[in-house]
Image (cartoon, rainbow, N blue to C red; front, side, top):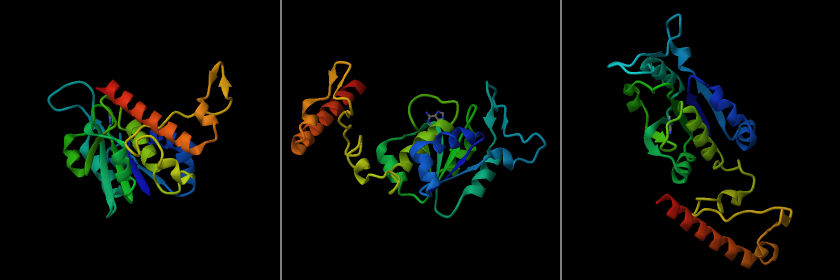
Length: 220
Ligand code: ADE
């Protein structure tokens, strides 16, 4: 899959996505990540990308034209363009699975007070990662790209790693334990030590259901 980000701060995305599983996915060619900086699409000496908001108010607004030009350069025939904004559709696992099927994603990251509203119709979707306000779209792009990248076939080495996991079947996952059996007086649940695969599967299934029910109650 190819992913491009339109951002004034490519390092905020490039750096976290150079580590661990996604970093390896990039090295192995499962994910190609590119950047287009609106600052490179300006004409003036100061390479201006933002200006004061019409109507007054605090902060600066990203100007439409440099973002438009960057998007024009990044866009291909099959691109799906996502504008990151707290007013967008809430990101979830179901959407991650949909986005993982796309050939090319382009993320537009606002910064400061956001981007001139006239850019919005250029995107196929406005997307939020939750009801809080970040300094910009970049940390949101990292979260979305991470969640999508691990769903690309071949990125996770164990095929069933994405099948059993949290949210895939609409359930949270049962808790995990590793060595030692007793850690600071806390013992691993007996069933997991039993070697009985049927019992273990039943234990995991009921823990998953309890955990999901408790989490839903907490969120209500
Ligand atoms: N930009 C600022 N806050 C955001 C959020 N919660 N989700 C997506 N983009 C954002």
